[in-house]
Amino acid sequence: MSLLGFVRENPNPSDVRGGSRTIDLGNGSEVFYVSRFISPDRSWEWFHYLDKEIPWTRPSIHVFGRSCVQPRDVCYVANKGLSDLQYSGYQPHAYSWDEYPVLKDILEAVHEALPGSKFNSLLLNRYKTGSDYVSWHSDDEKLYGPAPEIASVSFGCEREFLLKKKPTKRSVQSPDSSHSEQPASKRLKSSHAEQHSFVLKHGSLLVMRGYTQRDWVHSVPKRAKANSVRINLTFRLVMV
Ligand SMILES: O=C(O)CCC(=O)C(=O)O
Ligand SMILES: [Fe+2]
Image (tube, rainbow, N blue to C red):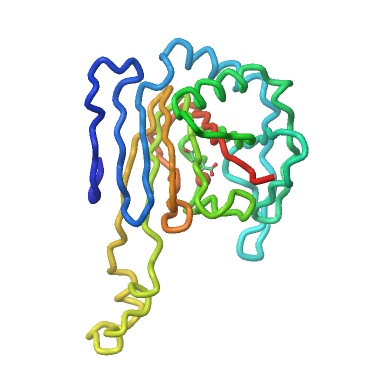
């Protein structure tokens, strides 16, 4: 699964939330993945509730000066009094946790699995088909602080989640690059960014920590073979 980097298998085979491992991405970035975080039955129960009850919208956003419809359904839930979230020229309405008690149950399960963690907001995504996706980005908005912990819970259709190292100044403009035999455009295309791939299972938990948002981008690409709905919840801490 991990192409580069260090994978630590959880040494406890009796762990009820089995299949957990930590991937050290280097330079203070880390991913923690639990494949069986929530039981399949409970996960389906929550999937159906979320699919039906969440007020999903598919808003228009602005990317590179152009307006386009976001390629998935979204919803935002947050504690009262937090700074507003804004991304790609879009400011989602913040719904209250009180309206969706199941979200509080999921948040409680996440807090329990991650002692010492604290989350006060939640971005929900629904990918209806394999044509829905999220393009390369990092969740590095100022309101999350310099090293946010982001906990991502997935239900329904399995989809691939990719992490790719952002190009460093050195890899973009290497001091030696002027002496290379290839033109600059070719050299950039042929540089292989470090990448990791995860198939996010029904009922799984993936946590990004440390400098993962500063140094890495992530995406859920289109997949022609993904033919059913996936719901993803990312819990975040807004620094008020
Ligand atoms: O659906 C996912 O697994 C990722 C969603 C995501 O990256 C985001 O909402 O920022
Ligand atoms: Fe993200």
